[in-house]
Image (cartoon, rainbow, N blue to C red; front, side):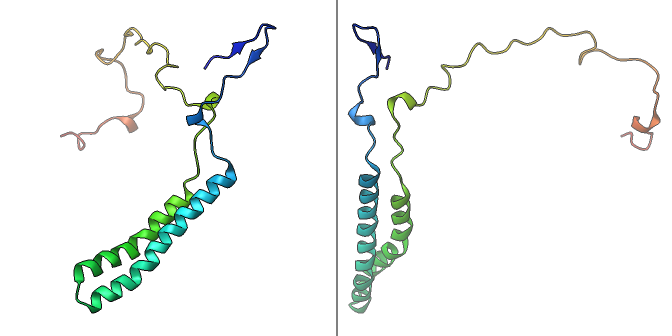
Length: 135
């Protein structure tokens, strides 16, 4: 967003968009804590449900409850660690292609390039192929 100027010529900051505003740190922490506690409450409730289901031979319900009890902690920790990552409008990421210029041009082929056969005298036999190395 470009800044607007007042009649005195001073630049003003653009208005804050509601969708881009971050939550306060306390509110974000409180929200994450409640999500974690809710997930752990579901996990805690799934243990007695699993025991009840196994005792009454309702095995489908029992295995679903066991799966919930086993899988919920990982998701609960991910939710608890998911800090609000929204940024202020001035810090919004830019498109990676907008800042790029024209692609580099290829240099003109030089004499002695890949298609050129070189001739001359070998100064070191250490870097030449011997007859034993030949296919």
